[in-house]
Image (cartoon, rainbow, N blue to C red):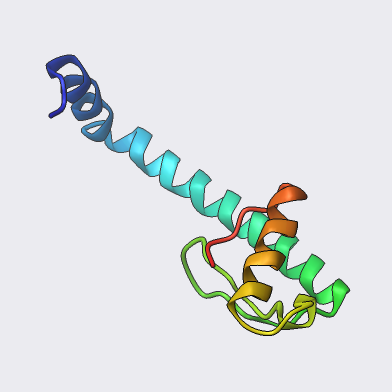
Length: 90
């Protein structure tokens, strides 16, 4: 359940077409910049990835980082990445 004041606040923001247009444009700009940085770093490191066309997800092939084959290896790689501050959805 959403409180009345919260619902009112969100409604005010969403009804402000100028704000929403600026927000969406800025969000797209930031996503493009973040993706360009990620893709550049992956290319520089020689890590295969699928070029993204939308959203905030990237498919990255990290198999060469596996020390152990199978799910245990994937969990271990995921933990090493988390320990370095990289958060992935496995």
